[in-house]
Amino acid sequence: MSDGTAVAVGGWRRLEILAIAALLFVAGQVGSIVRADEAAPIPPDAAVSRDDVHGLKMKYYNFGRIRPPGVAGIDSRDIAADFVAGRAPDATWVLGGKSLDFPPGPQYTIPAGGKTVGEFLLGASDNTNAPLATVMSTRNIYVFTGFIEVPAAGTFTFRIPADDGAELTIGGVTVHSHMHGGFYAPTMDGYAAKAEFSAPGIYPVKVLFWDRDRDAGIEVYSDVNPAGEAREVGGARELTLLPFLQK
Image (tube, rainbow, N blue to C red; front, side, top):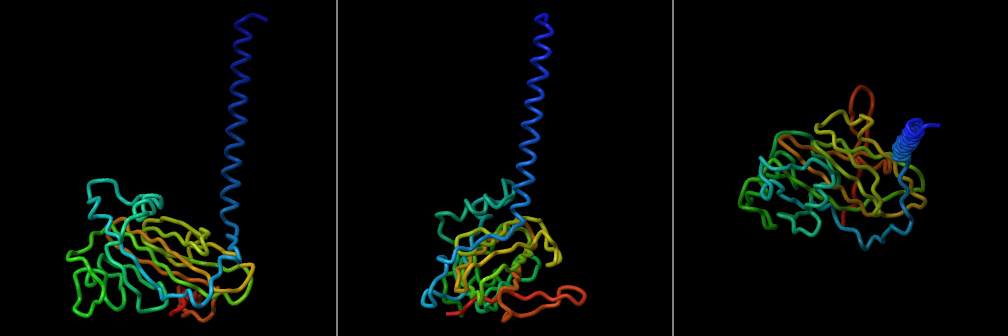
C-alpha cells in the first residue's frame, strides 16, 4: 500500500470516527429531551412545617435601569438568574392574592396587591413598602416565592404560560423552564411540566419570571390542589390556578 493510499484510508477512518461521535452526541441530545419530559422528583425532605409558611411574595428587579435598550437584553433564563443572584431587589412586597394570576397586557399592567406595578413603583399613598420614584422599564425580572400544600403523593402537572419566560422550582428542584417570547394558550405543550412527590406535605415554591420587552404576563396552573380557582381556557376545558398558602 502506497503512502498516499494509507493517508486516504486514515482520513476515511477519521471521518468514520467523527461520524460515530456525532451520532452518539445526537443520541445523547435526544435522550436529554426525553428525560426532560419526565416528572421532576421532589425529595420528601424538601417539605417544611406550617410555621415556616409566609404569604406569596414578589421581588422586582429593574433590568432596564442597569441595561437599557440598545444593549443586550434578557435573552435567556441564565441572564435573568445571573442578574438577580446576589443583587438587592428594587422593590419587594407581599401579594394580596394567593395565586399567580397576571394576565398579559402592556407594560405597567401586571397587578400587585390590587395596584399595577407602575403605580406601585411610582409610590401610592397607602403603600407601606419603599417604591422606586421612577417608572419601571420594559425589561423586568420578578421572583415569586411561596408555599403550596400537596395533599397526597403522586405526579402532578404544572403549567406556566408567560410572556416572555419563566422557571418553576419546587423544593429546590427545577420543574420547568421556558422562554417563548409571547403569551399563548395555557394548554400549549411548551408550558407544561410534571413534578413527582413521594410524600404529601408543604413545599416551598419559587418562580423566576422575566419580561424581555413590551407586553408581559404570567399565570401558574396545576392539578396538585383542587382548591384552586378553576378557569375555562378554551372550549369546555378548564385549568386550576395553583393556590399558594397564606400565613
